[in-house]
Length: 272
Ligand SMILES: Cc1cc2nc3c(=O)[nH]c(=O)nc-3n(C[C@H](O)[C@H](O)[C@H](O)COP(=O)(O)OP(=O)(O)OC[C@H]3O[C@@H](n4cnc5c(N)ncnc54)[C@H](O)[C@@H]3O)c2cc1C
Image (cartoon, rainbow, N blue to C red):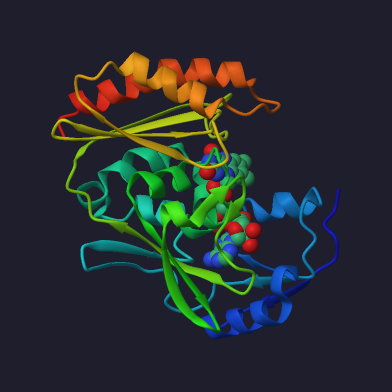
């Protein structure tokens, strides 16, 4: 199928983007890397009348550190963050999770903020934002607001972004906990995860996250020594797991029971 016809604007400033979003609302869509948006257009799951390309706006492709946080601008691609020299030291969790996102070629175009804005429940980047308790910076003509990952992520492909708002950046707190692990099951390397499981160990505290079970990432805290198999079985029943062409909910629960304890053990044994 071909997309529904649309107009295209290559914006030069963030103000231009927010003015267009104010004027057109939901009929307009921001075009970042296009790696998810173009598929949605081709399948006619979205039929916007205007695409606003943000890739040439000066200053949006920057990674900055301020106030104990790493700020990733809206045009920073996934590969650019992976190649950032500070990544392993400041955000070791993202250093292990990002290589699971698609393929080298898709990471060359796909942005960190685009994945956060899209909020696919199987995506590694929204799960990472939730694991690291990051925040999303939203700009509109009404002003700028910053919302936490948990406030931003509402459900499957649904976020707290209002139609007149652009995501200008996401921020990740610099990590002090260095023992991290990320695992997923996908049909082929580079496919979206059927189930993704993540762990960060800090002393005897373990932060555990799961993607691909519910409409948004689910995060839990454990103490080392707890009965992990029991705790993860309880999460599997609580989240149930959705059904799609890739897996039944029962398969998702089984995968979580296997991946969960393994990823936590890996984080606990990680030298950091
Ligand atoms: C073959 C293939 C394999 C892939 N595998 C994976 C995978 O394993 N894991 C994974 O997570 N992803 C995967 N993806 C998707 C890819 O990671 C995308 O990069 C990502 O989902 C969206 O980022 P983007 O910059 O391309 O956003 P776009 O596709 O440009 O936009 C996605 C959505 O977010 C909105 N948006 C984007 N940026 C902003 C902004 N700044 N402000 C407001 N709204 C915005 C758009 O309007 C659109 O609705 C894959 C893609 C392909 C083609």
